[in-house]
Image (tube, rainbow, N blue to C red; front, side):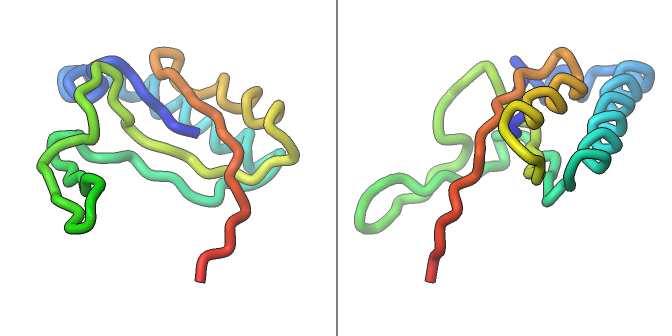
Length: 113
């Protein structure tokens, strides 16, 4: 699950304690509901995109400061959950803060190495 919001970091930085607590309450409800139906494998809040380093295509993989693309919507964080199916994941995603756009995808089972 990818959590995005237009101008997320500016909004979060200017949100008052009450607004931030509402979001945290949604995330706690989500976490509890996932634990009843499966498990949280991982997840993190991410730093502002301005802190990113992007490796570009090419033999020498040039590195640039900042995100891959300029976008209004910013990826603020993610969850990796283990539940029975995609429909369950979508149902659980509805518990996350309503201001966020949530993209739900299944993980591929890929062996590397």
